[in-house]
Length: 157
Image (cartoon, rainbow, N blue to C red):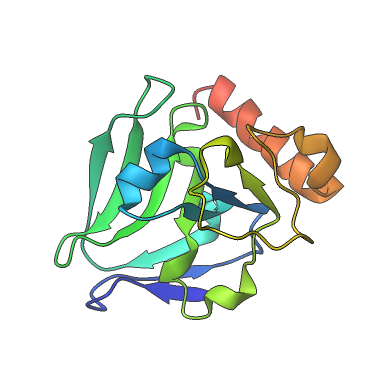
């Protein structure tokens, strides 16, 4: 899968399928994106190839540890985020920046307790008022990939 910012100065390619795709309806994501939710494809950062001028912008997060957003230096479009738990080892790619965002439908809707009332969810997609138990939705391969990220983060790599 490939993607880009709005102006095309930054392009990227995912070298593997994302581990999972979350559609987050929390109020933090609503405010940060300026819309009803954030749709993020979670993948190891070393499985993404980038081209173009980017900058990292630190923003507040609900955890209090902040969220680092990678943006195009020219048009400032957010390409992906890093959260404190996995540092820069895991990337939450903004699905809307993919050339074909239809390839990444949400595997789960999260924090629906603060979902805007006019957003109608597909009844086939799992929805959770808060978060979910990953072992029930993620594949064994995705869980192993996530465990490898956690090991690397713990080791400081």
